[in-house]
Length: 212
Image (cartoon, rainbow, N blue to C red; front, side, top):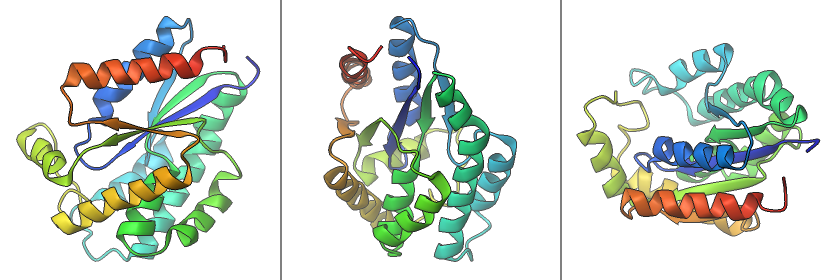
């Protein structure tokens, strides 16, 4: 394998991405590969500092365009410092969120326009797009209820948005799915956890088959 594979996991707040990534990593390892798990915004020191700024629940005055630019800046540094080197060395990178989050959250839910937000990110990513994206679909009501019941999770700025905003995020992901149906696969994240894990592992297994 000369070039690695780039797998991303997407979904609204409380969709269960952390658990889903554990299932993906387990399946990849069963295929004899050693994946790298990372996240956005974050994954490396500079991007983690940007994450702290953009998700700080005290920063309610943040302008939507500023938010979009900060995410794109964190994405660029993360790509150049961690993701691209790993892919070029033949590794499998599994990332919690990528460009689709910006399209759904800032492009659609914030009303900046998905094409406009993609243009910002096109400059940042230089053509590096996911090979496979798993979209964990969950209703905002269910996702937010999960967050509130998790006492170990600190509420970030996005968690505190109104229900209407989170519904727009879900609608934005529907548009992402329509635009990129060749790489995005939807998973019903309201199923029992074992069923979600089973579906994820089946999709990853089938996708990797013949590629490694």
